[in-house]
Image (cartoon, rainbow, N blue to C red; front, side, top):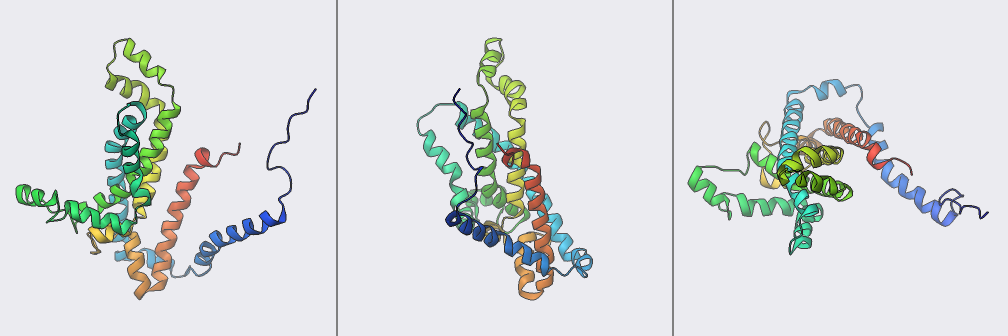
Length: 268
């Protein structure tokens, strides 16, 4: 009887791979450890309960949640379209959807200004027809965050849809259900874990958004100043407050990773 082949990764690591691997781990972990070491733990309660911090935190949570809701409403149908419908140019559409992932956030903010600003391609009509101005408003924050966060949800949901068996949908349609009913009653419950994971990723990305937000919505306390913007401002005047705010965002990031551990961190 032929013995099974050895499982990869069970032996000792060779030194030429082990040393740079450890160096890479230190490079990634050291700044986070330094943040914890330099944190003003004694004054942390006072820093985190100040009115400015509470305003920024509340605005961040509200805007990130609203941006995630926008991403769900628009992104789930877009992911279904990319996963289930064959059409010319689908690869190009997929690339355009993923573009905000690699686009510098400041460039994304400039693009939003050119599109939705008062003199933008669409914004001028919104202003003249409805008197609606989006830049430098709380709504502008939600738009900027949704722009950079939605691709995370679309990619996650599309991957889940591709892994799901389409025969369940086909069986529902043969029994008389419409395509939308099959999606709502069969497909959506099937892909719910993927939708939830994508929503969590989108929410975390929206919460940490900086470049597109400050470019498109500005940095006005109580109206557009979210937590990352508050960290940037505090770093110039009050480094201890900047560290405290950074720790809040770090805790949120750790919570997101903990929530996704069954999806990404399950050992094979």
